[in-house]
Image (spheres, rainbow, N blue to C red):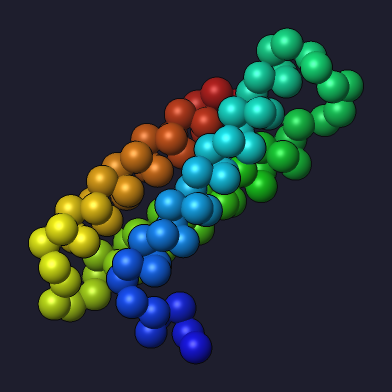
Length: 95
């Protein structure tokens, strides 16, 4: 089954999971850069985190582009887009 054929609630759940995982990975990378817990390069971890946030953002946009949405689902998708866009912008600017 394609991702575009999934119900909007499932897509929003997946968007949240991808987004929160990406944010956590980017925060771990940022904390390790400043406090040096591990002597490992954090670039790949930061890149994976940003990629997961982009996937979450694209899923939320996919939900909002669907027709005949309930107002509550549309509002959730808009909030998800806003949060993930701000988070992604923050982590891009901290590079």
